[in-house]
Length: 289
Ligand code: OGA
Ligand code: MN
Image (cartoon, rainbow, N blue to C red; front, side):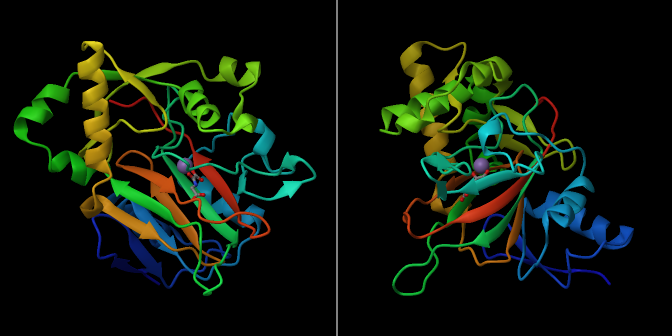
């Protein structure tokens, strides 16, 4: 059966109907999903009921999986699953509790950043009014690139930037989160790297802006002030409302995104005892070009 792909009324994203991820998919169905993912960048599958094994099996159809560098938050039995959660076990965080505090693209601080991520909602916090809390915003950085002036496209064409996990954690600590201090092993596994700030999608050929608020430390090859202003301007441009889809979570949502032409941000408008608990798999990627 061919899945029904319904694009969102936004610069990116589509809902996929008629697919049950708890069952193995035939090649034709899978190909339709993979094509839709490349075309729409974010795909939503509602009302799913999958265990860890099915989440992993579906994810592996897209390619090899990554084991996240923040190894304190890995699923104890399935290290390729990252727990995204605010839940505590005593004074220990069971998962990454601030995954999306700043606009970012997953693993942009690695030499080979992630190709995509698949996030499955198991517990979603709600407000007094019954509305879900903890929305996630996705920006199309390819739509943002297309909207740049010709001269700006020319200006960024050959520029590179430094990305680092340490930059993200220094921001978290500066913003008051003492638990965000990195250990030596994290620094060793994720030293700073550089990437082009305008990258080309290997499948669609579309260009996108590749800088983000959380993980881009600085643009290289420009005087300090100019580099800072350009980084801020590009980040602000990507976050303009016309490029953004805001996801309201429901239990059973599996949301997958392409980390090449997007960035995302999590809204922290909830706290314990309201619980949020999700499982994420992370697809390996290649160095940006
Ligand atoms: C992620 C992430 C945001 C959220 O899992 O990569 O950034 O809303 N999550 O949990
Ligand atoms: Mn993320």
